[in-house]
Every structure is written in C-alpha cells, then in structure tokens.
Length: 116
Length: 490
Image (cartoon, each protein chain N blue to C red):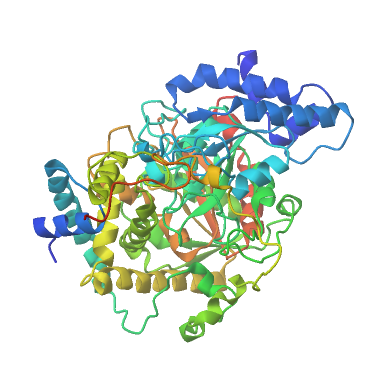
C-alpha cells in the first residue's frame, strides 16, 4: 500500500491541516518510509489474537484467557456511583474563557459558520 | 569544585535535614537554585518558564514551619522542575509548542499538586519535544536542550529538560512524562535515574495528552532512593483520573533495604542483538554480573516479539495522538490564525501552530485510522500489542525483574538524526515495549563510554511491582558505586 499525493491531501483534510507544497512532499516521503517499516507487522498471524486497547484491561484478569478481557466488566473498577449532591464545581465562566483568543466574555468567538 | 556547586549537589534528605536544623532555609535554597539556573541554563536550555513568585511563596511556608519548630513534610524545601506538558495553575504551560505559547492553565496537574502538598518548591517548567513527540528534545518549538555531560550532544527526549536539569544540578528532582521511553532514555543519556511507573500508578490528571493508553508521569533524581520517595508522593488513586488504579501505595523507601538475594533477573537476548553499541553492551553485561554477585539468579528469558515493538508503537501512539491533538484548533485557548471561514481558521492555526514532527504524527495516525486502513494498521497494531504484552506475562512467570540496556547508544550529536524520522524512532527500541505492556521500567547509570558519555541500565518489573524494581536498582547503585557524583567527577 503506497501513499499517494491524493492520500496526503485527503488525510491532511481529515486532520484539519493546511499543509504547504513543501510539507506535502515531505509527508509523502516520510509516510511511505514509516509505513514500509510498519509493514513487517503483517509477518505475524494475529487472526486469533484479541486486540488490546488499554493496559488496564489486563489488571487482575486471567492473562492466559483473552476472552476474559472483553466486555464492559473490564472497566468496572473505573465506574463510580451517580452523584446527585456534592458535585465538584466547574471552572467559573470568566476563568474558562480567559485563554480564548477571541471572546465576548460569554462565548468563544469564531468566524461565521453558517452562510445566509 | 567551586563552593557554589556544593549546595545544589544535595539530596532530598540532606535538604530536609538542613532546613529542619536551620542550617539553611527553603528561601535561601530557592534563591541559590535560581542563581545557578541563571548561570548554567543559557548553555543548556532546560527551562522554558520560571515561576519565582510561586516558588518563593512555597519556600516561605516551609520556612515558617521550620521557624515554629513544626514537623516538616517529606519534600520540605526541595527545588523541583516540572516538564512543560503538566499544567500548572497560573504558570504558562506550552507543551513545547507554539500553539500553546500563551496558555496559562486554570488548574494544577495532580502530580504537581501532590509534590507541593509534600513541601516541594516548584522552580519552573522544563523544555521538551513538542507535545512530548521526540527522542532528542530537538523538536521543542523554543530551543533545543544541550546534554550537560557534553553540550554538543542531545539530552535524549522527550523529557530532555527534566533529565538535563537534574544532571546539571539546576533542580534536585524533576517530573517527566514517558509515552515510549521519554523518561528512561534521557535519564540514560544524562546519567541520572528516571522511572516510568506502572500504567495507572500515577494520576495523569493535568498531563497534556499525547497517547492516552501509553502516557505515564514519573520522576527523575540523582539516586534511586530519591526516586522512590518521589514515587511514594505522587502515586495512588485520583478521582480526577479514571485510569488511575485502586492499588495501595507501599512505602517504597522503607522497602529499599530488603536484600535482593534470591531474586530472579531475566535477560532477554532480543535486547542484545544487532544495533546495540558494543560499549553499551559491555556496561550492561557488567551490571548484570554485579546483580549476580549480589545473589540474584540470572535467568535467560525470551521476548520474541520485540522486533515488532517500534512499528506497533508508532501506529498506536500516532493514532491516539491524532485524536488527542484535535482539540488544538484555536477556539478555546492558545494560538489562532485569523481567517475568513472556520475551516480555514482551523487548518491555518494547526499548520502554523504545530511543528513538523507533530504534523507528521497526526498525519500518520489519521491515515492509520482512516476508512480502508483501520484494520491493516490500527487493529493489527492492537493485536500485536497483545502479543508483546504476553511476552512479558510469560517472562514474569519465571523472573522478578528483567535487565536490559535503556538505549542502544549513548547520547548522539545534536542534528545527527533530525532529518530521518525513522532513525530517531529507533532510538526508542528498548523502551517502547514497557509502555505497550504498561509495566514499570527504570533507567539507572551503569557506566560510561570512552568519551565519558553515560550509559543506562534498564530494569522492568511486573505491573505495580515498583517496590522490587526500586530495590534491585538501589542494591545495584550501592554496589556499583556508579552514580551521579562519580559521573560529575566529584
């Protein structure tokens, strides 16, 4: 699978990156060189191997049995009771907008999104 | 040595004792360190931002405790630096990027808050590769860091500022972050101790995310004992980070003196193959011999998927990064390029705000996650991650720790690898596996090459078994007589 100019333009668009001509050429070269190196992963037969998204999937589990790692139970340790009272306060409004490049004090301001 | 370098050479225990005995004050010490930073750092570049007001206010609190004869907290008056990927309330935090050049966070990272609660004095924020993406600190959008042992060389990365600040004695200890080796590799290059704890051991609340399933916070110091004390301070469940584990924190310092005799140390041939510098090999093999002399049993183990670790890592890490870095869009904080439309604003802000390596990784990660390539790259890498983790599961059925080099070479020259991303990625070949598996790893000095460049010994242990990891590292450090003081020529 060789990355083309068209792929670079498509992926840059997905990633919201406006690349210069020079950067596009550089990306084309580097992505191909890195993906060529990555291709060695296909040497491994992984048909029967479960994917691993999180290390914490494995804590306290029978590590020889990957089926035991599936499902929402693996995240049970991270789930807390619903809280109705005593919630932690959010950031005050003025603090939350303080770092904004453009704000009217209430909202973050951006160029108009919807054209008439 | 000139008198001015004597005080900063102190350890955490020395400082606490000296303040308690009123031989010095936290305030005087903070001033001494700022003087030293002013003198040394122009040639090293470890700090990006200093926070003198915050440091001196904390020092005054410690001095008031000492004056009142009250008990001092464990890190009382200890001058500490923080990698600039951890947010600090009211103190500029850049992640080494222009896109956050003017960002003043409204809250503190949990690890930083815990250090301060234990009495530490935060001196400032430390230089790093942009968003922690790099192995040499040359990807900082501000300036590169020079290795204090040889200023023509890199300090390693991405926590290069954190390692260099400890090595140059501009801070007694520092925090770094490690996503693929970013604590251990610079510790090795600069001749200091650096620990990446178990995934979930230390809260990441307030760590600017690079790759969430691989990111860790950990300490740097001159000795294993100090690293143990820092870990004890920052470790433990934090309700603000749901990935922080409900696992009790042992007293790592108290356990250091438990003898290591009878422990099994694994040695994997996959970590001693082609590409390993002969002087690094000799130093690490000599260190393993020392462990045998201490009564450890050396056991050959196999980690057969090691050669697939770098490609797996660079798919998983970049995929996660492409999602995490989507938030930097010029809307809520940071740098913005003004443009006529929202879409143009996003694209121009991100193009001008991010450096080349960050854009390269966002592109690679977006590509690996895009329709048609997800199964071939991202899903494949997640499956190989399972295989790499099983390698460690099998090995740790036979041994208590695994010994390996931290990096295949000592520190390389500034500029040597900047034009070849793949060559730079291979600098992490012995460190990324611990991030993929989530096991703890430490790098401690174990020798120097013929150019007096430090070499690091890396040790791994089972999940949440930092106590054994630190014990073995401490025992080695005591016998080896090979530590920061010797590297500095004291």
